[in-house]
Each structure stands twice: as structure tokens, then as C-alpha cells.
Image (tube, rainbow, N blue to C red):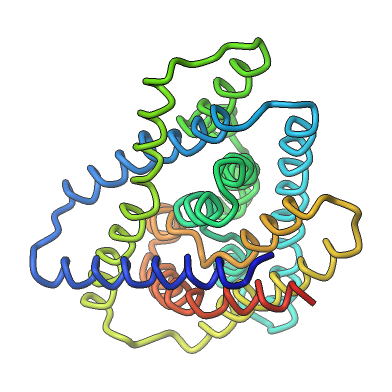
Length: 310
């Protein structure tokens, strides 16, 4: 992995996040503005990264094997991260409900909103495509195991399970790979369009995160709950280091290894604030963790990528 490229990409994203915070300080950011940005990023820009990856990559048996492999790795990784965080939370003697919240915040990273654009910037179109498939594994775990944890043992509905598979980025993966497998060649107009739209993902995502962070700090200040060291330490250091060691023992190709290491180092996933608000009435804990883990990840992601070179 080229540490210089990773560090440069993170530095650029950090500057754009700062610009987003500056913009939010000058102009009131309404709920409608946030919703519009999310819709553009998740429903237009991220699917365009995926399709751009397919259109600019020869879909061979090797790529299909990589896609299947990284999806399987994602499932194992996220289940393993939840088990590890849960075990450490129990060792720390956290109370049952609080232990669940700490486990979720520590185990699951922002592989979609930050991970997909970052991997596309570092590894090119195929990197964004494989990162999206990795994120699909997170979605499956999120809408099954995690929702089950937050519902305190209530039965899962089929609707929740199906919801994890029905989203535009995943549909883009299926459509893109299927069209490539049947030999469909998109017109040049489509290639250029998806290429331009894909370029929106990283800047818009970082601007949105900057706006979000400004709102979070304005609401809560820089105060933190005393156990915040747990999700920050496990999410940003322990899980990436264990992942790096474990994956070094495999004979996977370098691209998959590097993508998994980068995605393992992502900060706490943004959706946790919404889930906590709905199921535990404790949005503030998630909000603080998201804010501080995102800022710290600007330092820890380059550090993890540097350590991975050894």
C-alpha cells in the first residue's frame, strides 16, 4: 500500500471536512439541506462510483472472485468485530444495555459514506466497487444482528432482513456486474456521465460530514462521556491492528488486503445516531462517538496504512 497516496487522500478529505464546518458556521444548514446531500451522495454519487468501476474495469473471473471473497470477508469481519467488542465490554463490566451500545459503536465503521469514496480515491474505480461490496456485508449485519441487539431480543422481521438488500448502491453493484457478464458495453456518454458523477462522492461526503460535525459540536460542545475511550480505542486501533495481522496470514491478493485494512480503520458509522435515537433514546452517546472518531481517524488511518507496510 502506498502510504503517501493514503496520507494525501486523507489530508485532502480533512481539508474538505474543515471547509464543510466553516460553511456550516456561516450559513444555517437546515434538515432539508442535509437530506438533499444524503440523497445525492447515496443515490447518485456512490452508485456512480460503483458503475464507473464496472465500466472502467474488465469484468473477469478474477474480479468476480474478488467480489465474492470480499463480501464473505465483510460478513466474517463484522461478526468477529461485534464478538470482540462485546467480549471486551463484558471484561470492562459495562451494564447490559450500555455494553450493547459500546459494542456497536466500537465494532462498526463508516465503510459506506467515507470508505467507498476513499477507496475509490486510493485504489481507483475497482477499489470503489470492491469497497461497496464490503459495505453491503455491513448492511446485512446491521439490519439483522445489530437491530436484534438494540431491540433487546425481539424477533427480527423479514422486512428488516430484506431491507438490508434493497438499496441503490447494492442494486448498482448487481446491475453493473450483470451487464458486464452478459457483455453489454455502455455508450461513451454513459461512461462520461458516471465518471463525472462519481467524482462528486468524496467532496460532497466530506462537506456533509464537516457540516454534521459542526452541528454536533455546537449542540454538545467538546464534552465527552467518560467511557468514550472504549469505542475510540477498539474501533480506531484494536480492530484495525488485529485485522492487519490476521489478513497478513492469508494468501489473498494485495488489493483485497489493502482495501480490507483501510475499511477496518474507518470511524464509527454515522447511522448509529439514528439507530440509537430510535431504539435506545440515547442519540447523544452516538453523536459524540461519531464526532471524535471521525476527527481522530484523519490521523489513525494513515498510521494504520503505514504500519501495514511492515
